Length: 201
Image (cartoon, rainbow, N blue to C red):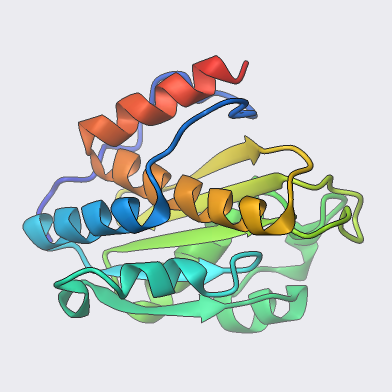
């Protein structure tokens, strides 16, 4: 792996706290996945995923572009808290008041996937993309995406609002792919994410 990942102390601009992304426009998931696979090929970065609310869709999207077999190691679908604990090493104590929809849970999911897969970068997502709040009271549209690399572990807090389940699932995938590109150092993704964050405040 080449050293292309942003250092842990280099913050992405405009991304402190929750981001609502109201009216934000992202490239579609196919385009983002193609960019991420291309970037990973160029930088020789191997990718893994840990997914809850997207149920494997991120890994599926990353498997589609040309060259994906050289960068996609695999993925974990951990829909329940128990699966997150057994497969990714998320401590039950970490679920706390917020349950599984928490930035630290997203980060530990990503770190667990990184360590268990042997990848260079792991993308995680946990959130509420169904038609009602979850059992812990998290609202529809709350999503945390996590990213783990040897340089550090990061999380992005998204509040998409009470949209249709299909739309929320695709937004979660788009946000995760965009966040990965931005954290790995793609300037276009960093600018897009920062602009979307500012527009949604």
